[in-house]
Length: 289
Image (cartoon, rainbow, N blue to C red; front, side, top):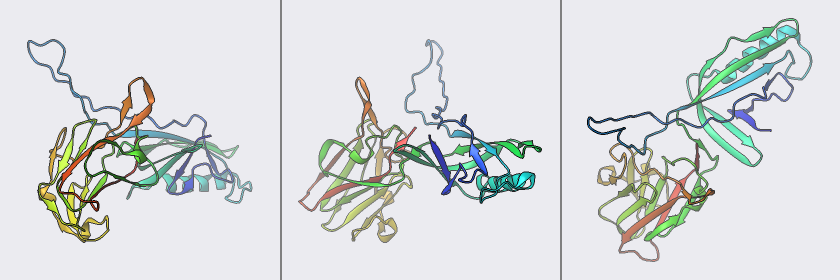
């Protein structure tokens, strides 16, 4: 059975204080922001691709009992305490919460925000209640729990980024690292054609870090992924491709022709004046619709 964990707490209480109902929704697929452009004298509308996804919501329905945290029968008074405890768990407003979905070996996580809750439907005599909660996933995509680091060739076309190849959604927060010597490093997402480059060079031992989510870049002189440890070169980064005016390089999976179970994420890297010490690395987590 699929299970959920919120901030490390199982949403099926081990002693039966509350349980998720069987009808609780599966993770919903995100919708697409609707944009329609028509022109006089042209039938239909202009074809638009690459539109962003909308935030998604997830409904969770709980059945509560009068069981105490130790598993004893506490009656209606304990039912009220359980309602208060569950409300405190799911109703956090001052920060995002971490929601984990697990089905067998599949584990997905998302940062969620409390959206709304129903009035509890309470059966006083039986010390039972039903509560429905809506969680919002502002970042749309579900992610792998663990970040992976991939090392490819600094100068090769259509390389498969294997640790995140199973993604079904774009990865918007990858961190890219080139190690010098390297001149004019450039990375292109094959699926969308979007790319980033930094005109200029890296000396041996220097590393260029590019944080695509923060739209920041830095040159560091040590083996680190910390942009704060180096010299800011954000203004030297050139981004091209769809949406490049307000975002950097979304790594996007592509489905193989005729086989939706075969997905790849391809990048092309080009750089000059390299040696055996030159390197390209990408640190990222898979993203799922």
